[in-house]
Image 1 (cartoon, rainbow, N blue to C red):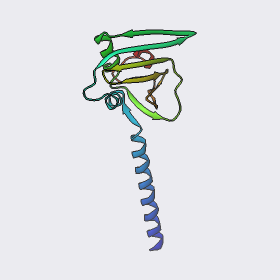
Image 2 (image 1 turned 90 degrees about the vertical axis):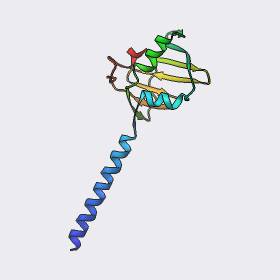
Image 3 (image 1 turned 120 degrees about the vertical axis):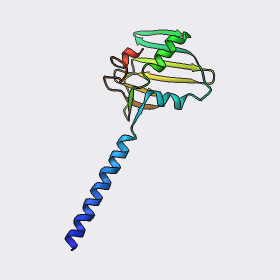
Length: 136
């Protein structure tokens, strides 16, 4: 009877550990849209976006064009992001200006950072062809 009880307790501990690790792993995933919605208030309107790239010197582009802004904000909205600890290698800097705040996004080949949170994007963005560099 004690061996059976020991096996059941061990099995229960293994099942609980696997369940907890699954839940923790799932909490690392989000989408670009969810992160932006958390950053933007309900009443914030994006007024302009500045994109910079460092190639020896900084190349910069600023737009207030709503079509371009919508493509930057909405087109990659289904992009799946996985939280990670490492700081990304940055290729592009995006500054999103709203009527109330500024959101900075740092983009790398397959990663990005939004307000101090680092994410891995992978090579393919669901609903968007190419990698994160094609997004700008």
